[in-house]
Length: 147
Image 1 (cartoon, rainbow, N blue to C red):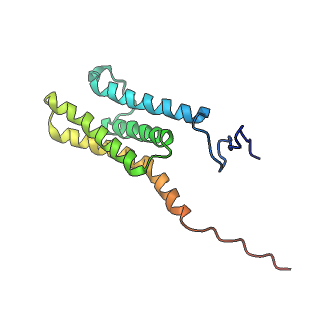
Image 2 (image 1 turned 60 degrees about the vertical axis):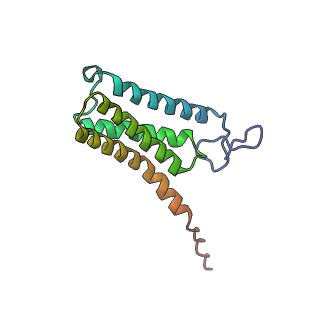
Image 3 (image 1 turned 45 degrees about the vertical axis):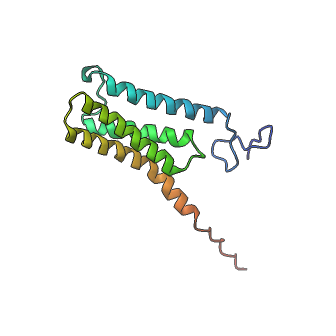
């Protein structure tokens, strides 16, 4: 059962129809994307003692932050090519880690942080890429019932 909007759009959450750009979930996705990006930027510039530790591993925190931010970015930019979104996040992470170099940090821990960031991003992209791959194969018709 689909719920049609004023212009015939399918407004159900899991429907196959078009979803309006101004629908509540589309707006929420954009706000969540901006919030996640802002949270990452603020966290980078806060002193380490002010940042709450969610897990024991610093690298898992980097992984989780970019995993969540990438998921929100993918939801917020449904028409943008995946390569463009991935390149944007790659440069975003690189820029944030490079700011630590200006403060005198050593290079190799920053490379490890960046790799953890990219791991989170890759984990978020994986289901999207796999689903696009699966859509390239036509569905088989169910076998005809025999009398």
